[in-house]
Amino acid sequence: MPDSQIAIAFNQLRKSYGPLEVLKGLSGEIYSGQVVAIIGPSGCGKSTLLRCFNRLETINGGTLTVNGMDLSNPNLSRKQLQRLRAQVGMVFQQFNLFPHLTVLENLTLAPQKVLGKPKNDSRELASHFLSKVGLVAKGNSYPDQLSGGQKQRVAIARALCMSPDIILFDEPTSALDPELVGEVLDVMKQLAEEGMTMAIVTHEMQFARDVADRVIFLNQGLIEEDGKAYDVITNPQSDRLKSFLSRMQLAGVV
Image 1 (cartoon, rainbow, N blue to C red):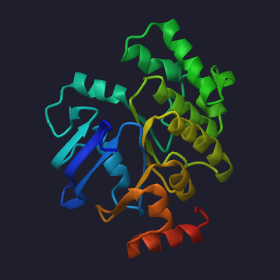
Image 2 (image 1 turned 180 degrees about the vertical axis):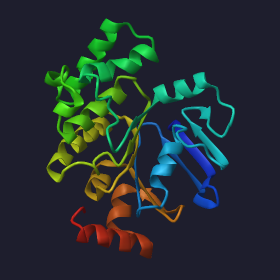
Image 3 (image 1 turned 30 degrees about the vertical axis):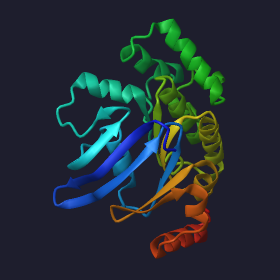
């Protein structure tokens, strides 16, 4: 995609926690409209990389630009970070819904507080995206009245209410019962078809193969493979990725 706009660019990106170096000089880019799946064994740095993309983690070295903002700058203001997080949505593994608020209130809070949208406008927006994820009838429900799959679809709708340019997904189905995974992946597939830029940390290899444009395989804090999703998943080049995928097959997730 040489003529496409780059949404996320990182060069020699490093992240450490004390003496432990988690990301060891990663370089790459994600283009606008691309869906990139980030895969790899536990502890390889997948979620850390994703959290760097919206400054939930600060980097220790290299450069990182997201939606035109230089996240290598240690002196970003609160206003700049607020703008970044309005442009870059995040869907977490554990939903992160406010339990004391209804579904509609969860969805309208940030548009009103961060974007300054009027209450009626934010409610219309919330209803629109609840309809998009098939939950328009659940607007007055509380999170503890929803299934795990419904909570995650609400979390996706909440991210969409901010009209983001990019959405980051951190293992969005790993906390779900197996029978609920499909309903969340269907929503994500629809977003991909509509051209949403997405970076997805996932263990759903079939989804990565069939929906993602690219797959990045991380191993021990380094990018070991990066290429077209179908090629990386069906024809891995490195022994480490072959081993990883074979274990996923044994676990029944490929």
